[in-house]
Length: 80
Image 1 (cartoon, rainbow, N blue to C red):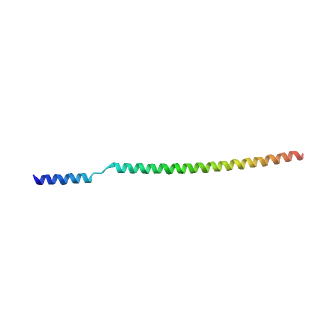
Image 2 (image 1 turned 45 degrees about the vertical axis):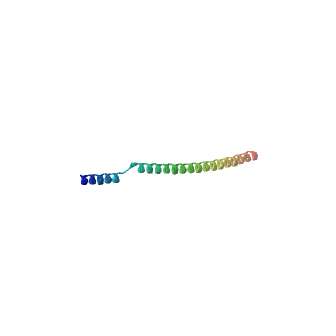
Image 3 (image 1 turned 45 degrees about the horizontal axis):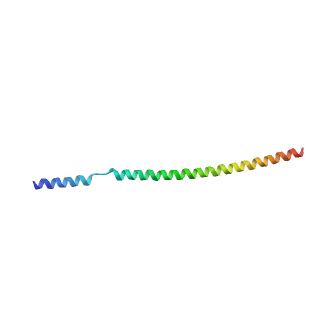
């Protein structure tokens, strides 16, 4: 009877030690997803800021060219 209890005890210890928990894996996946989302948001905000800067420069350049063209047009009208 003692041998049976010893065998059962070792079996119980072996089965508990070999069990895997999905909690750590799930937490790790959530941490990776969270980090990836944060990085994506950072890249998106940087890209948006760059786009806004380019659009602003484009608009200023267009306004300057339009102004110069209007001034040349007016000077040509004045000479006629």
